Length: 71
Image (cartoon, rainbow, N blue to C red; front, side, top):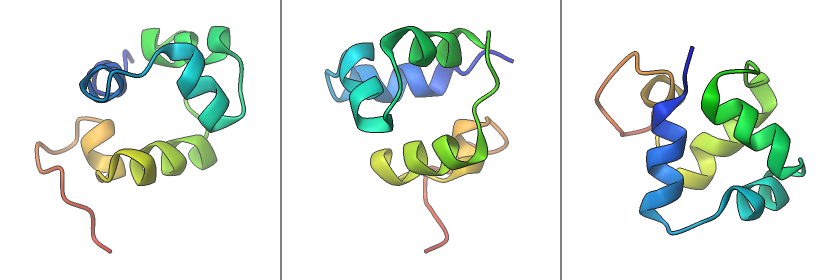
């Protein structure tokens, strides 16, 4: 699975992959692998991404087009 939405969300905020790696406590290479779908995103990282971008996990996984979270 390619995680296109995490790339789009990152670019919307003008963040680099390196900056996202720092935020998520991983390397730029690992983050890049997440975006390309070469690595599945661990649940803990997926939740951090959703919280950081203020979107639902389902939005990131393209299970919905609704960006709202259920907080």
